[in-house]
Image: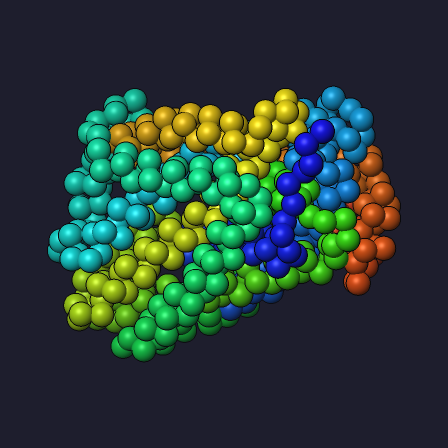
Length: 457
Ligand code: PHE
C-alpha cells in the first residue's frame, strides 16, 4: 500500500487548519452576526459555543482522522467496522463538494473585483454595477440570463490554483501554500484595520458593533446564532478536519492543536470585525446614513457593493490600494478554505478506490469547474442562495448531530479519550465528554427543530 501523505511539521498542519477555518465567513458573516445579536454581549454566547461545541468537536474530528488514519468515510468505517457509518461519512464529503462549487465562484468574483479596484471600474454606482453589469441577474433560477466570459476566465484561474495546490500533495502543496498565505493574510488585515480605524467616523462604527446589549442574552435565537457561527467558521461537520488530521504524525498533541486553531480563528474574526465596522462607520458618518442601510445583511452585498462604495467615498490615492488589499483578503481567506474543501472531497476516493491523488484531484477540478460555471450565468445568484440555505441550515446541523451521537454514545467518548489523552498535554476530560454527549446534541437538536418549524410555517 502506498504510504499515506504526511504534513511536514505540526506548524504546517496548524496553518492549513487555520486556513480552512479562516474563510469568507470571517470577513462578511461574523461581524454581522455580532452586530445583529447583541454587539459586545454576543461575545459571551460566542465563546461559550467555542468552548462547549467548537473546540470539543474539533478535538473529536482530529482524533477520528488521526486514530483511524483515513478521510471521513474511511475513518468512520474503521471506527465501527460498519457500512452505515461509512455511508454517513460520505455525506459530509459530498457537502464539501457542493460548497466547493459555489465557494470558488465567490473567490473568482473577488479576483475580478481586485482588478476593478485598481481604477474603480465599478463607477459611481457599485450597486447597479454589481447586479446589472457584473452578474446580469436574471428574473429567476430558471432564466439563465446573461453570461460573462470574464467571470468564467477568473473561475478557471481559481480552479487552477485549487487544483495545483492539491495536486502537489499535502506537505508540498497545501502546507506550503498555507504557510505563506495565512501569515500574509493576517498582515494585510492588520493594515486594513489600521487604515479603517484612522478613518473619520470609524469609532461610531466600532461603538455600534461592540456596545453590549445585555438584554439580548435572554433570547434563544442569539444563542443558536452563536452555535451556528461557530460550526461554520471552524469548518466542522464537513469532513475537512478529519481528513487533515489523518495526515498528522503519530505523536501529535491533539487537544493543544485544536485550541490553537480555534483561538487563532477567533482572533482573526475579531480583527475582521474591527476592519469591517470601522469602514462602515466611516461610510455612515460621511453620508449621514445609518449603518443598517449601508449593507443590510453582510455577505455578498458587503463585499461587492458596500466595499466599493466605501472605497469611492474615501476618494484619495490610497483608497485604490485599500480596495486591492480588501479583495486580496477575500481571495486569500477563500482559497485556503476552498483547497480544504477540494482535499476533503477528493481524499475519500483515494482511500476507498485507490485512485491516485493526481488523478482524482484533476477529475474533480475539471468537473467542479464545469458545475460552477452555471454561477457565471444570470441565474447564479438564485442557485447560490438555494444551495447555501440548504447546506448551512441542514447539512451542518445534521452531520454535527450525528457525529456527536454516534461517537459520543455508540462508539463511546472513552475510545477517543484513550487515544487523545496519552499524546496530549491537556486532557480531553469531563468537559469534553459532556460537550460531545449532551451540549452539542441538545443545541443542534434544538436548532434543527427550530429550522424545520420555520420552514413549515
Ligand atoms: N470556515 C469557512 C469560513 O468561515 C467556511 C467554510 C466552511 C469553508 C466549510 C470551508 C468549509 O468562511
